[in-house]
Image (cartoon, rainbow, N blue to C red):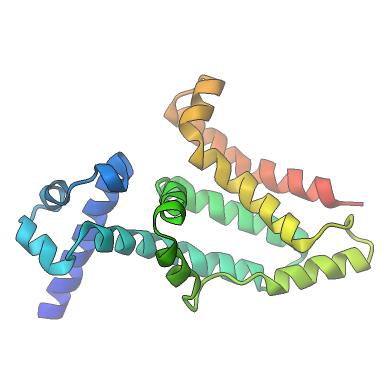
Length: 203
């Protein structure tokens, strides 16, 4: 019973922290705000998470580890390269629309706390791209796609998917659209990005 209560309390804290971090970022968030959002006192918050950094890492990891197994499965299944590109893009964009803070979390942590990112990479469910790389080389050898280093192709896929979420305030300004229309645009990109990449590498 106590363990169940602990899990419920931790989930409540992580959800509250996610909302505050999303609004204010790591530096702007305060533990008291998170405690208030979770409906608990600050002492109880510190019982579960001794510092804001540990709480931030827990929020980051809990969200990322929802996405990582999905991407890993897509990268390492037996689908065709084109289907892999389509499914990767669709899954990534759908997930980030639901967790829009995650790309900026990653960039923030890359710059501020590279040790934590190294720990994340060492997790057993962290996506691996070796099968994807082998598949790209096989498609090139069979004359199915134009020659390209697999690493470049993977970076292109990631960049086209990630950048619009990281730069959303700037892009909304350039495009002169509100948040609702921008989200619709992102949903359309699930198809647009994969078509763009597939057309760029086809013979």
